[in-house]
Length: 244
Length: 244
Image (cartoon, rainbow over all chains, first blue to last red):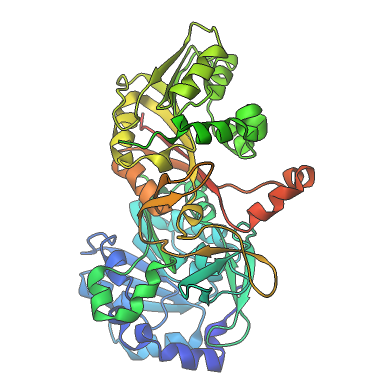
């Protein structure tokens, strides 16, 4: 059972004020990289696992998707997602992703943004995603990068030369990490990239793309505070496909 | 053109004394992980790119390989490799891997250990490997992990809590890194895991396994100095296959 930190008031309050919550994709600098991996959605069925405020479901419908299914564990987030649309072809369900049911061979795309690192039994979900995809269908997801999740004391560190260093330790010790991001005691699951990739392969998906996100020169020019993101990867993005 | 640091006397001297040089696979703690990815070699043709002292070519022949082809840029290493065998089905060639010619559709396995991170034009070599593999043939390789190659000042760092930290910076700034390992001015190419993986995929290979190597509990018990290797990944291992 996954921790439902998004329904902890202080977390939800903080999360709701993040740029990505207020502005959607415009507040998520990794979106252009993800966008480039999304197949044509015209007349396609999509599912968004960890859909939050529903930005992706609404966007998919704008791209011509025939139906969008959003799942989230957070009642708070789904309430707001529902307020933001009256589209009859967008459906939301409140569920723990470790227990959710997904219709078999039903989706052309399963999408998930920054959610998988919260799940303990991720491999069980990947098996369900494989079955839920139509042959040739895509899984495109992002998650926190293991360099970001590994440290027992995450945070920028300066030594004598005042450069920003990211203090990696325990990288190869997989398992829970407890951080105090927006609220105390947020539990994430630290996994290496190899573990993520091999899980996809074991469940029968073909890896198509793996990217450790970095800001572009243009993004850094517009938002100089993104420059430090070149020092260590915060997110990774992967695209995989069910064989036809 | 790749730097041929292995023919720099001080480097060769130091390298020759490493456990992996003296004891071969027994001195390379990542070997059991690599070994598990090697397909059955009976009556198979293999190539080892960056073959060094020829440990893998000799081992492949012991496993029943019909022919082993070893390539290395270092004349010093090849001389010693040739001294260590009189097997007529092992052939060695001195060549820069960025310029080597490989016979097309000829190999069941292309192997490379801790070599790819020295190459500037790695993608050109991967394209050649793809063509050199028989349909269904395997590429299995190891390289230094980007967490290991990224830092501008690589080395264990202790803060107040005296834990060993690995000071990551410049992870997303790919390109040359100059270190003083065994000799001054050793040039390595820093690439993210995503860059390695996407290069394989772009050249038509299917990724089959990706592993960030860690010592096993048993290895740590036998060699307690390996415990620190859990803090950050030093090597990664990948297996990919040419589609049948």
